[in-house]
Length: 206
Image (cartoon, rainbow, N blue to C red; front, side):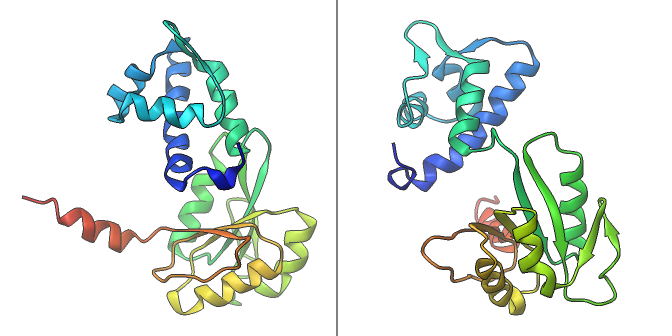
């Protein structure tokens, strides 16, 4: 099935399934049912089956899913069965933390370039990466075949940075700046606003 026919909600659940399945694999569990997955993740088993069936018939009736096989299939669906190179723009405290965390993750998504417009930061090293000025973005993204980017700049600079990334050929952006960014139709953007998330979480306080 073509990706544009799959809802964003389904795509966002796939990494959750993958994380749980990876945990099972580390525990040497070989098969799992949608009921078991649903009970652990608090997701309706019927929803899990529907999500996975949108991409193919991966389970066996009465047996469930082969954990290793399903892990590989979800990685293929998410395209993380190959190396995906990522750029980070804005190497403040959050940018530093993300780069350092990324350095120790054993998956196929790697931050391979870091940019900042502060001359005092340019030339410094973070997680083995030399911080570069923004005017080197186009060349670096092309040379390193970078496809995704993370924005951790102030809100006032986020749109400008996004425009530069799109112009350089970036296909997807994860935005941590507390502002909505406009992109072209062929570029996907996900917004992560910690303040808004905390505010909505506060609604559930007793």
